[in-house]
Amino acid sequence: MHYQNRRMPLLVLLCLISMLSCRGDRRVVLFRLYYPTIRIQIPAGLSGILPRVYVLDPVATQIRNFLPAGLDTALISRIEPERARLISLDEGLPFYWLREISVRICQPGAVSCQAVEEMFYQNDLAQRRPALEIDMFPTLVNARKQMVRNTFRLELWLYMQDVTPREIPARLEMEFAAYP
Image (tube, rainbow, N blue to C red; front, side, top):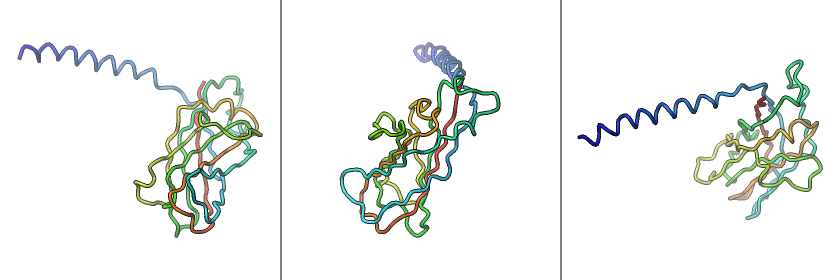
């Protein structure tokens, strides 16, 4: 009984410290960059152990369209990935053939994007129910270097678990948040 009474003040102190430390995480978003219409044609007959890489180079960042009036890109310290979704435009064909997805963004004209430039990912799709839309997780990468330019290189890495049955039209949506 005496031991439990001594733990209570310590528990309350830890809760207070935890609550106060989280207050610094409330950053102000300057603006959001939204890319809703990146079209992709996934070819029929893809299979294999190695990932298939779909490349779009260059993709316009349109950073000037997203900037609020009077704001310069020099005032942006971070551009973080927030959410992404891959959508099958063939309503009769869910993404049962995918095992993993990785979205990477790097400088235009690069030979290939590196793994450290991964912005969004989704893994273990084989364990999930096939769907027409796949939501991806954002990474902690600061995409400022790539997104304040006029263009970037986008790579969609597809890791297969089955053969693609036919050509599949798809759309990639991405959203980023800019911070001071």
